[in-house]
Amino acid sequence: MRLAVYTDDVYRRDDRGLWATEAFALFLARIAGFVDGLVLVGRLDPVPASGHHLLEGDLELAELPYHAGLASPGALIGFPRSLVRFWRALAGVDAVWLLGPHPLALLFALLATLRGRRVVLGVRQNMPEYVRTRHPGRPLVQAAGLALETAWRTAALVLPVVVVGPDLARRYRASRSLLDMPVSLIEEEDLADPAVVAARDYDGELVALAVGRLDPEKNPLLLADVLARVRAEEPRWRLVVCGDGSLRSDLETRLAELGQTDFADLLGYVPLDDGLRERYRSSHALLHVSWTEGFPQVLIEAFAAGLPAVATDVGGVAALAAGAARLVPPGDADAAAEELLLVGRDAAERRRLIGLGLDRAAQHTASVSCRRLVAFIGSPRVARSREPAAVA
Image (tube, rainbow, N blue to C red):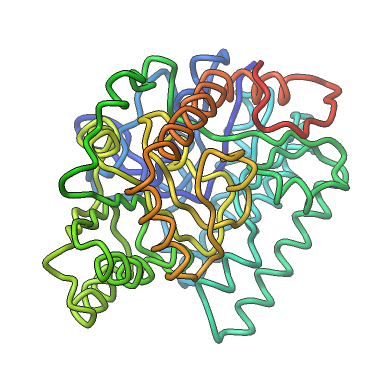
């Protein structure tokens, strides 16, 4: 099967190859090893440059016209050319996986259906919640997000859909056929040695690691409040943040307001295979404070490193963790601080979390997810799947 995958992502090229702006594209590149051909469909930045994620493997790019985003003037202008280029790309594929909700993805679904290609939809996040947290106080934008979500769910009544996490599975439960699947970049060889993990020292400085975009839906300002509350009771804690985004300067300001600047390191984006994996293994707890999530990849990465996790109970987090993380309500700095303190003090609880986390990571490898996805897309009749942790 030759597969085309569309996401509203921006790709870049330089002399080293093709780059993506989102880590999800690394998972897409893994799919190339499980199909006869993979075509990524997305916007290409006309200026040669690198990005965060170098895509390796046997894959092609069907280039769509570049624009800065749906709100930019060039977005609608470029739609007709995008449709033409997608139509041409359909000539060389058997099936398409369209990630949305997105206006172009809806039009692509129609074109692919007219061309007789198998069409599968994809959903990675709760669109209304995402828009609400990213654009507070903008009711028209939020209404547009809800309308787009409604259109996508309507399309899913007649088309198969792949969702990430049980929260989205519930929202799309009326779909024609449904696969609830985690997205992972971890393989079995990435799992930490339990003996090495057991030797992690909690007697000196304690590092709370936060990984992810510093954007509104990730609620990064709460990290400063949690750090201040934790250090008020246990001054050995330090915060390390791996990620960048629109709220970085706001986080720096909040840390300064709370007198925590000297106890926090904002490292910017750190690649998994170039420093981040070691950060997971050398830290003492993962601190994850998002307002909204599907199945957060950072949790799987932390579990694979044997790192105890404190995470907000949103989206598919509880189902992914299955007891392997300490869960707190979103936006509750006191609860998150209390759980971090517990992780630092309770060796028995750490051992429990580490053991369960390693087991969960072993069930969520990239190869398992890729095989399940390709089998679902390639099957003419797909059965419902409600078990995101199922092993193929």
